[in-house]
Length: 237
Image (cartoon, rainbow, N blue to C red):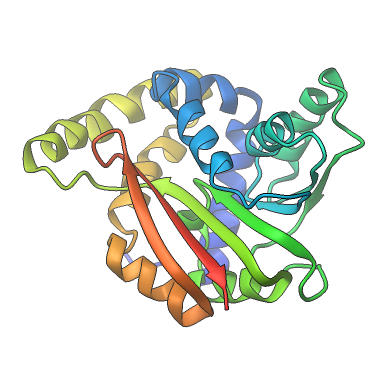
């Protein structure tokens, strides 16, 4: 089967996430056993100090934005996502928490951000960079909109380095997760896509080098939960 071009892949990802938006939060909690909450909080703890203007890309239903505002009540957060259904699912969460005046959601592509140069103190993206067709372009956009000395944090799934853990993880990822995710969400396509997207993502060192080429220094990464997730960080030079 031919590999889809970047435009086709982007449309496919947008369609898949739109289809699972109504149950996205529930599925995340079930399939990760709730561990994904801790991963996001770890990313938020790595934000710079001081009053922040933050751009959260692939913001989905605003989980990261909410965590940022909980930890940093004086922050101003802009969330951007390709999928309108995901943004619509996130809006009631902001209203229920009285956060709608500090978190602004908008439909936008990470590859073509509608924000001025050097607007943000930090940029975050959790479990979204895998789904971006042109990752180098997205990283360049992040470097453009963050201020010099500002921080970019990228959280995503990884393949565990330990061979035994990787085999167990592979069994869960290929056999259990697609079945459960498909049954709960009604979209087998989305949860068959997930393991393929993780396996097709660059290795840790390779992705870190991509960040360096995009204009970030002090690039480093840390693994969580036996290497199931990885947090990358860099500072705009």
